[in-house]
Length: 119
Image 1: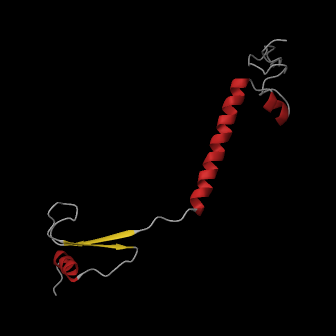
Image 2 (image 1 turned 90 degrees about the vertical axis):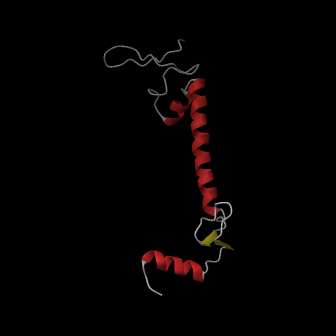
Image 3 (image 1 turned 90 degrees about the horizontal axis):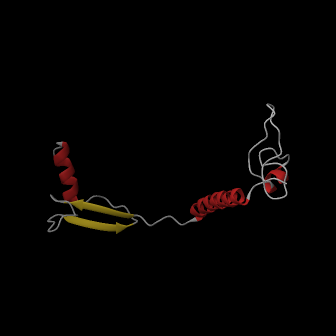
């Protein structure tokens, strides 16, 4: 038995696809899902399994992320003339884990100066 599909197309030409050992038709011309599955060559079967594992991993990580605890939130407030990320900062930086606070008086005054509001 040959390793090519035995299916004859409408134009009288035979299909040139490879078939699994002992199968007469390729996966495309096999009838039924079971015959299609077993008509694949070993290489086609390998890549089918790679695809299945990839889909399952995607769903698994997606479901895992739904039930995962959210990361803790850190609020950073700064006031003063310089950014808190610059060395020798003369301003004020407050780090509050998870609890938002009202801006400090200097920070509120600075916002008012920028917006042009009078005190």
